[in-house]
Image (cartoon, rainbow, N blue to C red; front, top):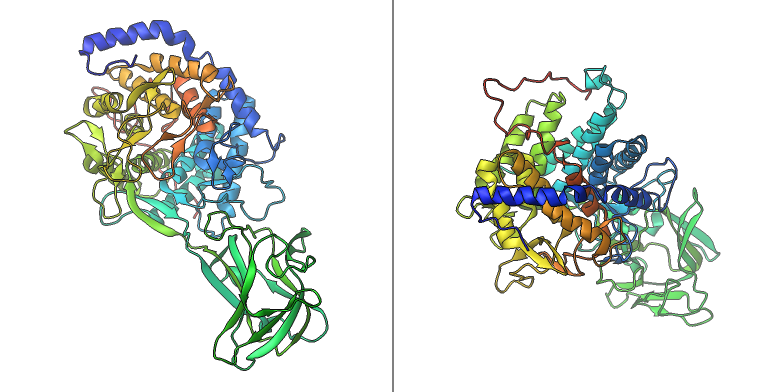
Length: 617
């Protein structure tokens, strides 16, 4: 049974008290097991003191662009894990939180664009001791505002845990690098997603999934002869033209020099190599004499004659009719699908040429996704809540940016003026690319997050009731909240009714109810914690330790290609731990404490101002 939000206030309080009596012991019953799950997943690939991220899901893994989400570490989930470890704060917890923070620092410092950003996810099995570039999984190359802000919050939470209380100026603290990393995130957000015209912060950058082709003249690297030789082309020659080496689609030759309209070239091998590490990927060694498949098993072809004698490796071009002959070798099975060849581990393209007749003035090309992402102009309410808290927490720690209050206020203005629907007492999900309200998607997280970030139950507490009435449900033997619905008739992702329990959102609502109860509103958190404890033990996909993402596979969200599955999930487990420990993950405070900045100050007093310190530029 879903607790009713429409009951008279007195009855709601009575129900809350009864639920508290029956559920208080359950609240923390699964806490040790949940922490055990976080530690076990963190140690799946590396169990020492090296920096690393936690794989977001466990078996049974949800589907993903490369088949499943195995090996994938979402930065949002890892930021939540940092907060969960810091909340309990045992020596091992603090150690683990530090290792995750160090891994996130490494990724920030090694991003291909070198501008302070992070990507949506990385490979949890990447060894950062030997790595030179991030391993960014297929489909998760985006830099999204909320996820970057949550990473900044994680760094601040860890910094607050480990800073020396005897050093008042954070500039002089030996762990100031975590504070500085959060400032770098803020600077990136200001430079890339802050809207100086209309209040609010846009959603971030997305990976461009339209291929580009870049080429280099072979003559820049070799003069061909009739005898065998290696032609070595540095991959930087392609990357410097904006090609993302992690998303390669095809290798090709274009015989485009009018001074050499005919000729032949014979190959012994085409390889990607890294002499420093010894890594070698054979694109084609022509050993099977197959003129239509390369050694990777993918198609080759083009407008050339491919000799079948003696080995099928000789290309003959003829442009005398005015055409441009070309030849390609695919690096993926299906060029129209998302997975691409990751060439980031290699530094050279090596062509082993057996001989050539007719000159070397042709172009060597690689095709793939561009490195430069595309701006998302739509704005999300949840992202603006994240930025609001990040800017205030930076200011609270003494960061000297005089614009921080303005940035925070503009994010808050988007939430409370643009996204707040006073008629129904809910928050809209955000705006579309034309800045009109997104009236199609009705989502849970902005309702609970607004309570955690802003407080003020008298103004916004009704959003919790709205979420319960519109997105609350019982499904698969559990009562909780769906992620959201899509009310757009005719939309391909139309899903107008809740269809499954999203346990992460249910834990978020439990935390929000705790804040509500502290301010005199209803608090149904004991009931939902009881449901989460049951889910920990008996939900589909449960392992007795983690919280699974959803009550069954394929719980819809109303957004394209975005569903939740009954898989053990780091994010859901971290939010569950926050609720059991009564921790407000936004502010690194207790849900029993005042929400900073938006709760009214104590009667008869004003908040004390904090000293402002200038960090080194």
